[in-house]
Image (cartoon, rainbow, N blue to C red; front, top):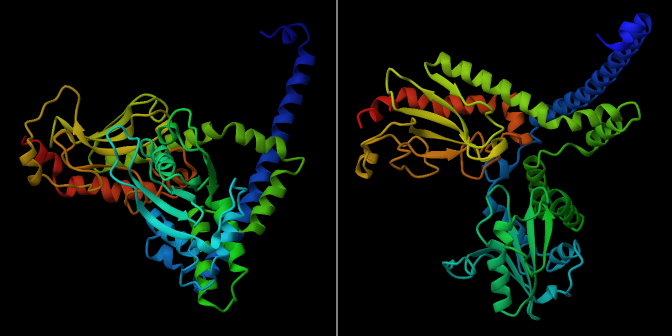
Length: 431
């Protein structure tokens, strides 16, 4: 028994009662905070629904499934940056873009030329040269801006280093712009160890949207150009999952109110644990659904935390050696993928020639003898390569997909059902 409780029971009860009241008060504050934020989210949802009914939410980039295509974004940005483009605004858009950063050289926008997917030769065996530059901007004074555009694609080995080496070989006075959704640093695999060249980070949220807004101010509101810029800007806001500025400010005002700050910080400190609970709950629902469909499931201990942890789904009556696996080789559920693989200690007689007789369920990556139906990372509900971030199960985009069940629907419709409907395990068991 606690010493205070033993020596002075009444004082102990009073202290415990005070602590309980404090906890309940803090819980009330937290609940009020969440209720207020939820009310704003409901208003925004109602606004979005009204826009949809009025035809104001139609976006050609999104409708044509182009919003996650790096090539489309590169071409759109390059078209606006090109002084000789059909937009008819000359070099002013390029000038506004260059003003986003204090570059060490003065770029002559009037003599600029802009190229996309600029080929700098085959990638060498030591990965020191070659590749394709997303956007290359040069002027008559041998200045160059090299823009590497990253939406969801992974960085390639020595990618920025190869571009820097190319610029040096051409004796450019240059800077590399590393453009991402969230302005993160390029990884070492891309820049190399101890890089001796200049690069700057741009983000779509802080830089490109600001630039587009500046460009829109230079266009007549009734012009096709203005509407095109507006559509592209809305596409990026959709891609970034950005809130209306008015609602964003309202949430920030609530969160930074003196009585709410401690609750907000408590949520922030427990972000990983909260997401882990959501992931665990999702896995429980997923496994229940798989069981209903006839699968036998095994979940590794510490799935989603440790590296090389997986969930296996098999149908023993159809095959005792093949199973569907969902998991990752990395910690914290990064790069989560799925595919059908052999169970431990099992062997197969599948040959390369046999693969043509086996259903290729997932065409993102090739069929192999060890993975005969193909395999894929999780991307988005479309399943297309680089179309989303569902491969990172702690990413907010994936967490939302778990909550609204779109990830569950994808797994059931695109993974579980084809396996059952095509009798894949029975086919594989022949080998």
